[in-house]
Amino acid sequence: MLIRRAKKEDYPAFAAIEAQHPGYPAWGENGFEAEEKNRNAVTLAAEAEGRPAGFINFWILRPQVQLNTLAVDKAFLRRAIASALIGKMLEYALKSLCSEIDLEVNEHNAAAIALYARHGFKVVGKRPKFYNNTDAAVLMRKSLREKDL
Ligand SMILES: CC(C)(COP(=O)(O)OP(=O)(O)OC[C@H]1O[C@@H](n2cnc3c(N)ncnc32)[C@H](O)[C@@H]1OP(=O)(O)O)[C@@H](O)C(=O)NCCC(=O)NCCS
Image (tube, rainbow, N blue to C red):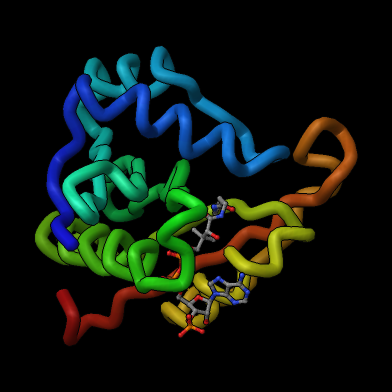
C-alpha cells in the first residue's frame, strides 16, 4: 500500500468510496477539487492493488490539525489503510509543529470511534444534533506530546 498526495484523477474514486458508506457526509468530486484552492488543506490517497482505496483530508491550522474526512473502500476494510492515513497525517502534524489533532465523529459511528481511540484520540466534548439536526457529534482530540514535536 502506498500513501501519496491526492490528484484530480482520484476524485471520481473518492466519490465512489463515499457512496459506499450511506449516511457518511459526502464531499463529492467538487468538494475535493475545491480543497485544491485551500492552502492549509492536505488530501492524501491510499493506493492498494493499483487503485485508490481510501482518502484523508485535513487542514493544518497551526497549532492545530483539523481532520475533516477519512474513508476506505469497503473491499479494503480492516487492512490498516485508515491507520496508515492517520499515521501520515501525524507525520504532517509533527513536521508542521502542531500540538493537537481535532475531529468530529457521529456518535453512532462505532468503527471510527474505535479507530480513533486506538490511535490515541480522547473524547473531549459533544455537539448535540450536529448531523442533520439529529445525531450528536463526538469531539475527539489527540495531543502531541512535547517529545514528539
Ligand atoms: C472507519 C474506517 C475509516 C476504518 O477504516 P479501516 O481501514 O477499515 O481501519 P483500520 O483497518 O485501519 O482499523 C484500525 C483499527 O480501528 C478499529 N476498527 C476499524 N474498523 C472497525 C470496526 N468496524 N469495528 C470495530 N473496530 C474497528 C480496530 O481497532 C482496528 O484494528 P483491528 O483491525 O486490528 O481490529 C472505515 O470503516 C470507513 O471508511 N468508514 C466509513 C467512513 C467513516 O466513518 N469515516 C470516519 C469519519 S469520522
